[in-house]
Amino acid sequence: MVSLESIRRSATDGVADWLSRLVEIMPNLAPTRTDPTAEDPAAAGWLHGFVRDVVTVNPETKHDLTNIQIFLIEIALDCVDWDALARNPRFRHLDWSKARLTYP
Image (cartoon, rainbow, N blue to C red):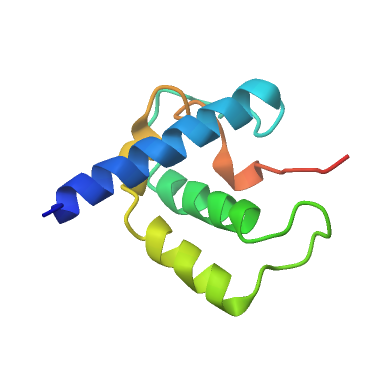
C-alpha cells in the first residue's frame, strides 16, 4: 500500500521537475526577488496559485478545463508540499507573486 507521505513526495517531485523545466525554457517566467536569501512566508501560496492557474487552463484555447478536470487536478495539487517547493534552491530566488505565463 502506498503511504500518504509517499504520494506527497511523488507529487512534490513531479511538480518540481515540471516547474524546473518551465523555468529553464522561460527564464523570464518570474522576476528575481529583491532579497533571494530572505525567508518569504507567502512564497508557497503564490507558487501554488501560479501552478494551479497554469495547469487548469487549456494552453491552446486559454479556457478553463472542465469542472471535473479542475477538481481532480486540485486533489493532486493538495498533495504537494508547497513550503518545501518554495524553499527549493531552484525556485526560492524567484518572486512567484509576479510570475506570468504568456502564450505565443
